[in-house]
Image (cartoon, rainbow over all chains, first blue to last red; front, side):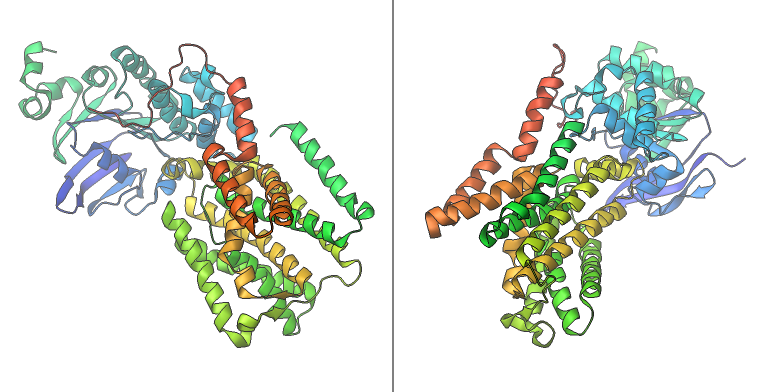
Length: 245
Length: 325
């Protein structure tokens, strides 16, 4: 069976910078994979490539049997790729509920039906109390959840979570991680991107992909990956080894 | 929008339709015509400039297309109603050209592009003498022959009701939400599957068609149009200002804006003569500085703040700042 999401020898350059350099990996259905790597490793670029914001210079991206390389973001969304933004992008003049309704509008044109589905998603993310607040007044942890809620409301087959736990306290991050763990129950595969909240990665990810300077340097289960010398060298730091996680 | 607003609007429209039975002075009716014409224009602009957040400062292109389309096509022998329909189609063609190119641009570049297009049309109209009559202008056929001003007034009310109905319908639909999503964050809209380019173009089509009808009405009332009048930046600005003054992105805003702006400018003109433009300008600056959301927008947000005051302990975040690592 062909992989669900297949990144095949993809490269992306911005001028002289090789943001993504010949990266290949695959994601299976119902899998939660995390892409980790230091700042500037190319995580967001990779998400932008998968969601159609950028197009690869070389290589190809296949999703659910479809060649994605020349898709626009809205077409990728229609195919079932939901995404969140690292720097949150709420619809500021709309309420929380309306923000999530926009996700639901992908598969229904009725506002009342969209509102119903949005409420369900918000309940899942434990945000129902904030439903009628304008999105512009929300604190960051809520905005991060709102990003996820909006993406989930599109009923994606794959969700790209770009730094959803960045900027959250450890407690908040772990609470969110517990919710993310349940995504496969909904038949949603997830690819997360995380810079430094390794605890979340260890508890949620089935598989970890390590990027450094746009190059894939390691791949495997969280336990395997954190013991690889090149990962410790490039990313985790030798202190991490001493901590013996 | 609440039901009570709709009720108030319905009553106001019903009363407006009865006005010609009472008011018989041409002067007053002409002012009222202008108010409603700009209410309709503001509502039309609001779909693009307010709900979608695309600051068009070139709506004179569609306004002029309506007036000139009606004039040129009926001069060539087309019946009046057919000329009007074709004039609207010409405006749609312009919208397609302008939108297709300008919607690729964001922010101030979009506004500049729309100005440029309208200006090109104005210069063309001045120079294609055979087609448009050039600077001398062109005759526009009268739409009505008896009780003229009253009928024009009723037409302008009718057009406003049409634009209002379309706005209410859109603001309650998925399409309306798509427009607001594009206004608030186009990347987010794309990420939930909104084909932003197409949605913006559809909004512009509706806006341009309504604007063209208003332009045709305007030209037909005065029987004569020149490029510097119907294709001028002044018209583009006035349309945008009406909507922004009343409250861009609100249903009632453009109507309130038209009433305030047009009656104020008429009053100021009669009191201060030539100095009215100065006062008019100062008023605009005051509104932009202190009520950036417009009259209706400001009132609404005062109410919303009362209704939706976040519970204590709900800290307003610096959400706009990127997460610093």
